[in-house]
Image (cartoon, rainbow, N blue to C red):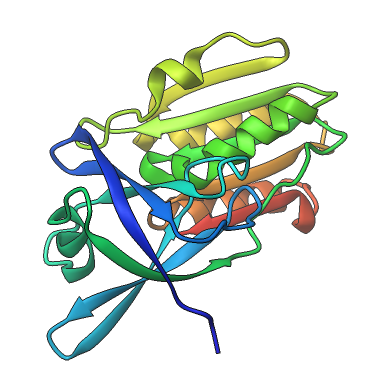
Length: 221
């Protein structure tokens, strides 16, 4: 049985009216790998809701973690989290998940994030940039309703790193144009995360174009 822990909200940062970050102070250190998530145990009318939230901060800060929360219309879990203020308690289990990166691959690495899919990719990207020997690129899809998160941080220039921002509707075409049609190279490694069918579409297009299954890792929310 999963061990439950309790964290307290230390502060809240509003990215916009529909998206915010919750910074949780943990009573015990959480040893996690970039890309993993915790399962929040939230009160509900008829019991407890279990909702997974990716950790958007680094393992080097194991007692203060950041979660990115979207307000989902009619979603009791996100509405509860949006109601919390500093000092509120949250029960959780974890860490969980296999969509992870401990060090950069020895090949070119491509991260593809759509909207709040940037949450697990943010610490993965940081780890990759600290250990990479080949170029690292982030393709980040956004909409008017879901603006770019961590924009200043992600746009900071670093050797061997490229940031490409595109409308979410153009994300598949951007990936295909750059990594399918542009050349025959198929040794790249991809990490894809987002909400909805775009994740499986990208997975299938890349694998269908000749990339190995293990080279296209993904997480769909």
